[in-house]
Image 1 (cartoon, rainbow, N blue to C red):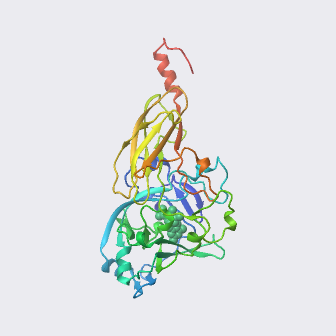
Image 2: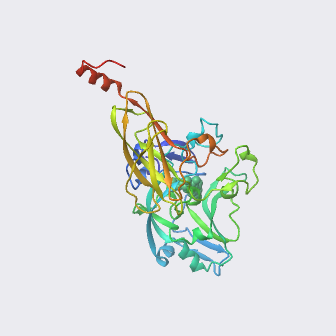
Image 3: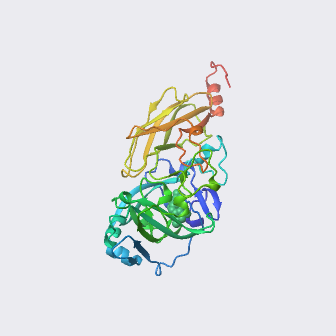
Length: 379
Ligand code: MTE
């Protein structure tokens, strides 16, 4: 088991290691198990000696801090929160039939997961350092060095001040009640609930209060929404829109794409998520391409920062059926129908309707007909 993961993960890259679970591993689980949680890396996983690791807090602060793991744990109250992480590239595969997205992994719908994180509030650490009023952004640097920028850089990000001092933003050292796994950022990572996963910096070593957003490659040049005609290899730092809060999104986790199912009633279930201060208020499912919809039941949610699971029943006829789903958020935004209107050069934020295609089990149908001799064979 690589990095403690299930062996059936879809591996998008070995080095750096990038992988997502199959749909079935996420289906109907409010909290994702550690062995099924997706992994997104931009460089090699760093080797960190916990006893030597230090967290430096600097920039626009009254007093710089340098904290060992023990000091961080001893000095700051531990808070627990169930929160969903979702990669901005989640569901990129849906863009590829519109137009290729060169150089980016074809993530399916499972570059997302929900964990119970615990650690210190970033707000408490920033307050202890005495963050200045003119610090509009808080930047982070990880210990891993990525070769994607030229020259290579540590992975970094920043978030605006209000999000940095919000109660939900954590410096987490624990995931699902266990010590944070190395592959997920041990000894300590940011968890920025409701923001794209890229802002939740793993293996964090440095936190800087500053007046501007981070100039790190992954904030200033990558993870930005570019115009369709832009050349992603030739953009200027700051071009396009920096991605922050996650747009309303959903996908179907059961049945799987291409599944063979019995005709008749079929349970359809999945996840829906809306970032930052938005919640999922409705999920609709259709089997006639969106001409008519049925509202799904909204199921458990571990916290306002977690995805909302949903389920409903549809009727599968004798033909191949496309099941589609769309979610609505508390600002009345709904997922758009088609990825064609959303395509962008880096393939981020595909929140078009979820679709899976299922085929009726013809052998079951035949068996059924054998026992009902009066029925006309339409196979
Ligand atoms: N932090 C560091 N240091 N290096 C990285 O490559 N990847 C980011 C983020 N934090 C990354 C990082 C991205 S793009 C995502 S989606 C999440 O981590 C994925 O977190 P996970 O691997 O724990 O699922």
